[in-house]
View 1 (tube, one colour):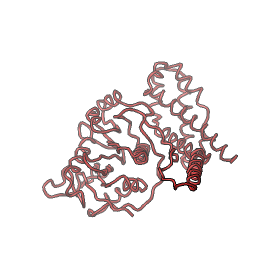
View 2 (cartoon, helix red, strand yellow; view 1 turned 30 degrees about the horizontal axis):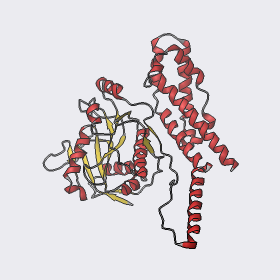
View 3 (cartoon, rainbow, N blue to C red; view 1 turned 90 degrees about the vertical axis):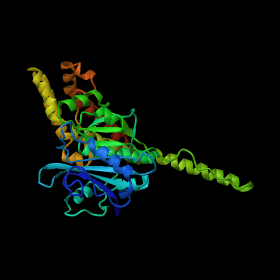
View 4 (tube, helix red, strand yellow; view 1 turned 30 degrees about the vertical axis):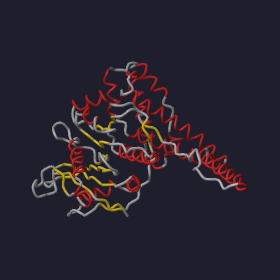
Length: 383
C-alpha cells in the first residue's frame, strides 16, 4: 500500500477564499509548504483547456512535472468529472513522489483508478492510497529531439506516459516533463516547458497548431534492458586467489550475456512490441479513413478503405487484445489496399502524418513486429 500527498485543481471543491472557482486546493502533507510545486501544478493545469476554456471527451490523462530544484516528481492525473452542479467538468490531482524509487512503485499501481475513487469520495482524504496493482509497461526511451507533440489517445497515451517515465528511471536519466493532455492552440508555448505534449484539439485553430508541430510516428523506441556489460570493480585477493577471482568475474559476465540473448527474453520484448502496435491500430479513427472516399467516386478506393477498416476490427478485436500473440493468426496481408491508396493519392504518402500514410504505416509496423515475434517464438520452442 502506498499513501501519497496530493494537490487538487478543480471547480467543485469548496475552499475558503476562492469558493468553488477554478484553483489549487487540498495541498496535503509535505505539499502544504511547497509553494514551488504549487506554482508548477497550477501552471500545468492552466495549459489543459482549450482557448475558450473547453476540455472534454478524454475520460482520463496522465502527465507530470519535476521541481526546478531537488528530487522528486509531481505525477498529474486528470479525470473527467461533473462539477458541484452536475455539469460536465474535470479535475487534476498532483501526486507527490519524492524520489524515482517511489515513482516506480506508483507506476506499478492503478494510480488513475485511485484518483477516480478519490474524486467520487464525499469528503477529501489526507492522502491518496494506492493498493490495486497494474502490469508494468515495456519502458520507452526518446529517439527524437524534444519537445515531442503527440495526439492524445486515451489508453494509448496512458500506457505511453507510464512507459516513458519507467524508461527514464531505468536509464537513470532526468525524468521528462509531460503535459498529459491539452485542448489549446498554444502548443509552441507548452513545448518550451514540457518534453512531451499530448494534444486533444478543441477546435480548428488547435488542430492547425497541432498539424504544424506534430512529431513523427516513432519519436520513442522500446528500451532493451540487458545485464550490465561490465562487472563491478572489485579488488582481487593477492597471489594465488587472483586467478580464481578473474575466473569468477568472467563467468558472471558470460551468464549475463546469455540472459540478454535468451530467446525467452527476446520473445517477451517482441510480445510487448506487438501489444503496443495493436493498441496503436485500435486508436485509428475509421471516420478519418472514410473521408478519403469523399474525394471522388473511385470504387477501388472505397473497397481499399473498407478492407483496412475490416482488418482493423479483426486485429484490434477482443481476442487479440486479451492475448497479443493472437495477432500472429489474425494479422492479414495489408499490401493490396495500401497499394491502391498509394496509387490514388501519391502525394498523401509523401506526408507521414496524412491519414492514409498513418493507417498503412501502422499495419506495416505490426507486420514487422509480428515477424519478430514469430522468430522469437520459434527459438523459444526449439530451446
